Length: 244
Ligand code: ADP
Ligand code: MG
Image (cartoon, rainbow, N blue to C red):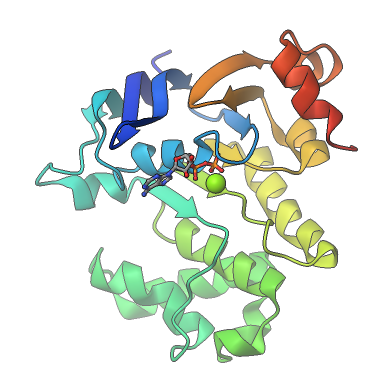
């Protein structure tokens, strides 16, 4: 089967600093790929290249047989196939939760308001937040806001979801409620690329683990292989710094 996402020889520089060097990756439909690696190794930059938020210096990102390129005239359309959730949720403070969720479907996809609202409520229900629909972001906890951010990505019907350390800014007691939502998405067969520092979660959710260091993919494998028997010294040292 053809991969849904293909990255070929990706290079990304910030002036003369090599943030990504010859990164190659194929993701199959329904696959959950988890990227781990030390802070500053290029994980966020890589995700940003995947949805055309960064110009790349060399190589290719191909989604659904189409090249993703920030300079393309149809990049807005292409980007809709990719849902991204970041560490900071960026909800609009003066809009209610429901208004936040239906904003992009109405503005970008020109969907009917009634139809988008109906789906928004179903998705909010799914993450346990339908009772918050008329509240404002400041009235929600960090974990609740992050679940709204996930709903905001889902309502666009993306073909692939990217998560960048979505629990990194949360208090420990809220980490779990968010990871459970991500895990439920994995179980229903969504295609996802997840960056996380939660190693127990990575092990549970991943079909494949990618270990990055210094802008390169150093090692990749099945979670049981990676966590039990990392192949490289660097991965071993990285894993030693976690308890999971
Ligand atoms: P990670 O997400 O793995 O912590 P990042 O992708 O955020 O790492 O960053 C990788 C490297 O690129 C870091 O050294 C960072 O300082 C650098 N970097 C990221 N964004 C920029 C930028 N806009 N300009 C210059 N350097 C950047
Ligand atoms: Mg990062």
